[in-house]
Image (spheres, rainbow, N blue to C red):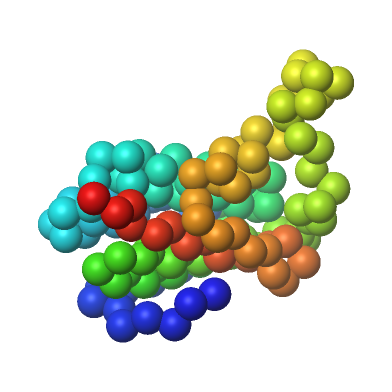
Length: 141
């Protein structure tokens, strides 16, 4: 992933709940708004981060409030990089089925990963699927 001059960063080692996740997402979106990022980018970042948090909390940590979710964000004028890591056992991102495949339309799994891949510019999994690193390039005006 790219190396860039960061103008803002934020780290949170939080409890595993969506209320905390939504508070963090609001802070990130506020930073993007202050720097003039467009509504399409704001929506993409919000969707990608919310899905990644939901996956970490529900699938990774199995809604265990004693487990943590590590959130780290770096922002430059034209790029946002976000890392989310859970305390779970991990998963194989290559084994996630494509929910757009007609054979999988009735399945409930795979939609979050699909959304993240489509909303973010770059996505990388590490730590056996326990950590996701996502980047979003600012849209050209």
